[in-house]
Image (cartoon, rainbow, N blue to C red):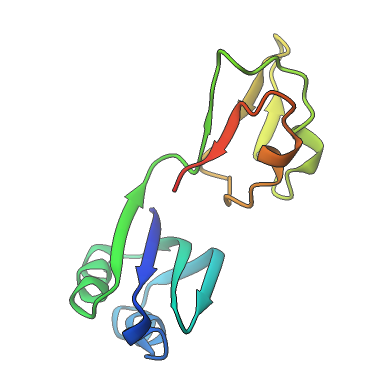
Length: 128
């Protein structure tokens, strides 16, 4: 499951994530992170038998957890299927289908935002 985690400044320096991984024996893949003494946000993938319990634990420790299904949103009406975004994706989450339409795989996407900067019509936006 992909989720966005939000940290308040009061818990940024705590070892909540590493403790959670150790306690619940989960796989915790950090896709993107922005953490400072002022707080933080992370885009992560969490899996394992105790993934749901680990999420409850993180919430109890003060981390806000927002499960997400879509990392980026593609505006089909604005998209002209030019493909400018395809080559910039570092994880190959964007492809051109047989009918030449641009397709984004949100399971693979890490939300880096490179595609948003390359899109001439601003048809792609990172979900926040």
